[in-house]
Length: 413
Length: 147
Image (tube, rainbow over all chains, first blue to last red; front, side, top):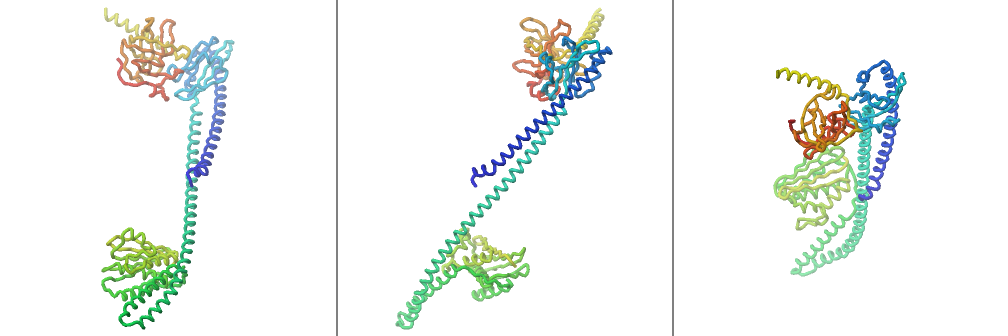
């Protein structure tokens, strides 16, 4: 998926959700904040009303303004307060902060409370008049702390950002997961499509080459019979040349047979058998065939391994691998291990032979790839084909001069 | 004779201090009476200004143009860590008040000295030494002792 598509299909909707959440939350928070501010204002006005009554009472009792303020010094939420006469001259004031009484003539006409930002936080201010029992007019100026409100707003903001972060994080992880899944699905689909095309192409080529091989084989058989006839009839001095020709024709015939066999689809005839028995048969047969005491093949297994597979084909596959190992090893041992684990059969063949270069290792299972003068390069190609026909896997590790190891994995057991 | 004179002076000073302390607690930063004064430092003193607070740095400033003397209240001594010297030029922005109708007093908000501005209070008169964002950011730079 292109970056642009990812942006359109994944990132944009997430961004939209996040933006909507952000906007709605902000509106909600602003609404709550305004409501709370209104409540605080109402509370402040109520406090001011109570204070006015009390102060009026104290004034009637001839209390001095300083004495009155001392009575309210314990009120933590009142940052400052002032008492003014009818001419709006300050009679007395008190403040929690040195010389801080932010009262200006501009505020005298204000009927509604107003807010001042200070380093100690927001402060609600109210300027209001009252009349004492002797009918004198006084004004009271109050600065009321909004600390608890600010704490609440800060807490709300913190909660919002945490929630916002969680939603955004989870959303991003979720969408990245979907994106990965989508990519994985598309990649697999592409691989499956490529595999399907490859198989189709292979099938066409196989059909074509099988036809060609068949067409070649018939005249070749006639030619072989003709050479056999000539071999019997020609004079003795030509006998060797005719015999060589016949031998070459047979060789061509054998190559075509092998080639045709490699192209044929494998039809598995599964049966149950013990791996140890099969491999021991192959080992004995190969050791007799080679008749060399310098290289020994040793088989071992962790547990009894029973397979449900095509015995003939697997025998051919193991024979190819072991023959290759024998040919590559001048002296030493070839070790074969087998085990069954989690319903899978693991077989390892390790030789201490010449080993392969990296280039050779990559192409070892390719058809017609061979390091031997006489080899056609069909054996390991067929081996892989047989293993894969059993839904198995074969891999090769090798170091030049150190030997080669084949790892086979077959399901079942 | 000298001892008696010294004693009288000391008592007079104490009396003035007590009286002036009582008066000075009544002043506040009046935002309607902000002025800017440029002058020369005549005296640097430390004295109590507000109840239950540590001594304040107060400067006697002679205005350049008129020659009038202003008592400029700067900040608590512990808060202020700049060098001031007698005879040094100073520009003070602050709130003017008079405790007796004659003396000229200023509660400083900003002080400009040697090209540097020191912020002591916010525009409403909130003291920066009482916390908040302005505590360290707006105090200006440099450290030193008072002379």
